[in-house]
Image (cartoon, helix red, strand yellow):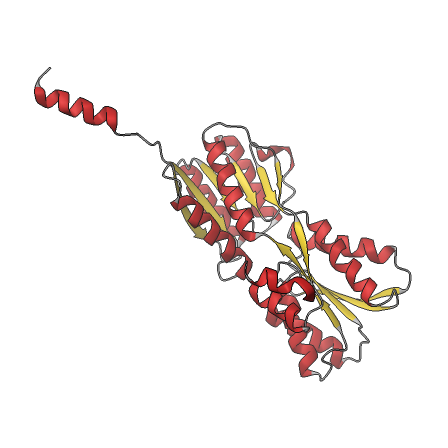
Length: 304
């Protein structure tokens, strides 16, 4: 062996070789505060792991676009897919495609019903039934078991909206003194929620409390309540404990939020995707617990 060859061989042996796993992360909608937190967590975790690279793609709430992005990632032989699904339909189509191609799939934050064709799909999320129950239980308690409630749903095709609403209605079913007087979808959006609540109030609807499926809609409800001159007279609850949501709880504008750890969901989803890409075992449901946020502990959550 020549001296040059020996040096080259020594260099090769001394240099660790990383097989980089290319993971495609399909986000339902950038600009959504909660989803952006998840993306930030995923990006941060990826930077600290030299064996992983992550590309983030925005579906912009378009199921067809998300399907096309997913199919392109599968065709490009992504080591794994991570998806915040736009809809149950897009989730089911991509789960089937990934399963047929043998590409591991991690659904993040939302647990769509995908059936047995989902292949290696796993789910990293919080239990949304629990969020709905926790939220409505405190609302009922603050109303003293008597009064009227309205519900602002998220997008009706998404599991998070369906389950948070169902969890709240479970509590209402065991609260005979509370009447559900109105409910509507505001698609997770603040402006739509503000317009919907304004219409309810303008129509003379008597509402003692509003349970919103997320903080954005809760903040929209609060804006409508203030515009109607009813500040402090209608309780409002949210979910997600976003920065603005927690601030509203701390100020007393919002009764409660339910903390959903976006950062934990993001980092855990990437860890699971990385393991799956290497053929390692990952449990099918990786739960991230919810936590109740009220005025007394809002300052603690504002720092998160």
